[in-house]
Image 1 (spheres, rainbow, N blue to C red):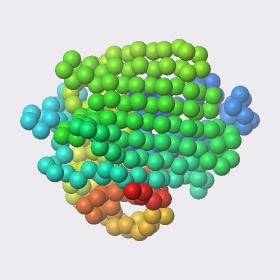
Image 2: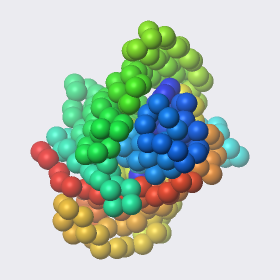
Image 3: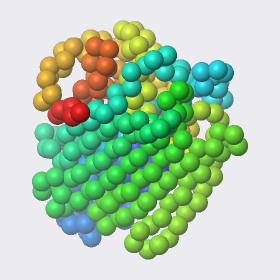
Image 4: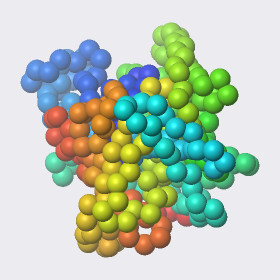
Amino acid sequence: MAAWSCWPSLSLSWCGSLPWSMSRLPQGLKPVYLGLGWGAAESAPLQSIRSLLVIGGLLCCLVVLIAAMLSAQQAPPTATIGPAPVQITPPRPNYPFPDGRSYVYSAEWHLITAGTGIVRMEAAGNERKVIASAESSGAVNVIFPVHDRFESRFDPRTFCSLSIFKHSEEGSHKRETSIHFDYASKKSTLDEKNLKTGETKHVENDLAGCATDVITGFYYLQSLPLQLGASYEFPISDGKTTIVHATVDKREQIKVPAGTFSAVLVTAEATSGPLQSKGKVWVWYSEDPSHTPVQMRAKLGWGTLLFRLQRIEK
């Protein structure tokens, strides 16, 4: 779920435009095979581990490709991107949101466990919020420490995202980024501050309609029927919009540390917008009504990331 986001600016580019980029190398690094230090060029495996930590830990890899734009129940809005409008499905009446459940994942690259990611949903008055965190571990934490915190708020009646906030500490980079969605004015605003230099950035983008973000989107596909052979097309937005196509391909038995699950395999990839042709993601959702995402795999230009459910905490 989720090869999908990276953040120096919280803009979607499969990890290129959100502050923890997986589709591009970290600022200042060159693709040469020298050294292991942060000040010098890093080896290809180390670049991959860095991306794995930042993206994998946060599961935004999954989130970006599985995120969705949703419409209001009274009059579903549409996005006018591509040759035909893309319509979004709001949650069904009395949909049981997975409130109070924390999904704990390991992020792995070539059998190396590089970090841990946790995603949790909670009720917040008339809204709901999703909290996500990423922590590096082991030797990778010494080479490139990652300590990220996210919070996304959305309207549970529609799945329309309302705001995103991220505090990121990734190596020597420390930033805070926020995005607000104003559907009345059809605008989204991004504000970012470099906590080391004090430099700030403010960006406004057009907003076609009800949208989910890269964190809330983690739960959108989970809310759909996911019947074998079904396909879904939807836009995701963090200011810039990308169209994602997902298909429910087959049933499989999946064994992860959290247990063995009968699951359906969902394949997702961007078909237009800034994420097009950036990679492909496979997500295994449990076949029971909870549709728990038990395993995710993301294939990118430099390698494959694997996310495995360790446990569910309540």
